[in-house]
Figure 1: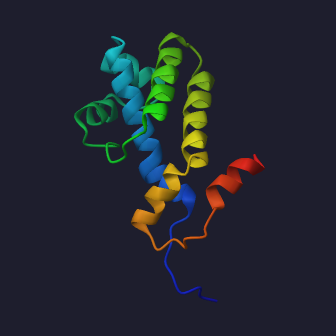
Figure 2: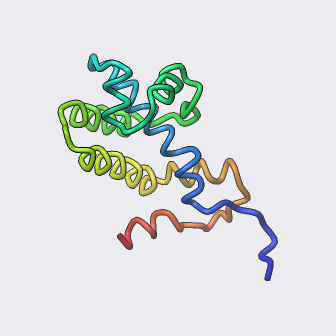
Length: 130
């Protein structure tokens, strides 16, 4: 059965675009708090090379966050900078991702990339189901 349109799953948008944008924003905020690239890589559980690419805008820089979401990133970075638990890091990162999905930023991004029906409300509905 074919539905007549090609569309990526929302999770694909998260993995390829949203998560890298969140990591990029967090890496830059953590650097602003004085952490080295090595410390940032350890905190975020990513390679130093990935941190370098995030810092240079070669990876994850395709999404502009609103003022409200930038403040959420700053708060998460402050928490992550003082945290020793990778679970705390994952929790903060996942909460940022969920917030972006609830605020329809992901929907706007998805519509720019794919032929998403205008009446699609999948992401906010998925967030409510959690």
